[in-house]
Image (cartoon, rainbow, N blue to C red; front, side, top):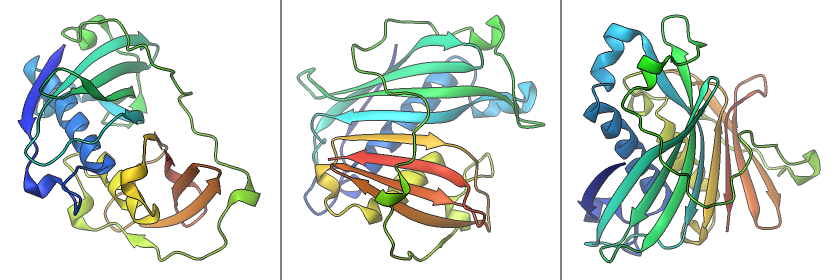
Length: 238
């Protein structure tokens, strides 16, 4: 298990002095990356191996949002490898050791030169020690887009992928889709779970076309390309 401790700063909270699901996703992403750095498989190692784990999906469940000045511990560990995929859990604990967020993530191993998935070797998996999975109800890897009758009819202004969206892999940072999706949720603080299904990487200059679907307590924000194919599907439940 790898863990990071941090204090919630003013720049990490909203008007209610609490973090939101976008900031939670930042914390989890940082913890996963620093775990890889700690075993010598971080960002710098990419130049030598030309292979890396790419995020395929999130399932995050929030029991309580961290608050301003609160001390938290973010923990992560791999719990399975199957074929091309790796599975990683996360916990966020408060200062008393109580779980306030739990999450699962799915990663796919990629040859970054030709951007094709490849099966990870034992050497590729070395250092990622398997530990028991969290006792949570695991959702399917893929998100099924809601029926057309659930689609909102209003037209939403497209989003241009700007330079500030881009990470070191030269595509839109995974968390950016989550933070952009929050503009389409009326009460962000009411979000209790979120799933994200990454289908295709957007790059500088691409246009994201948000499409909204609603059914009961579920809202889907689908970021599509100009042909109507999804880059990413974000599903939130309140």
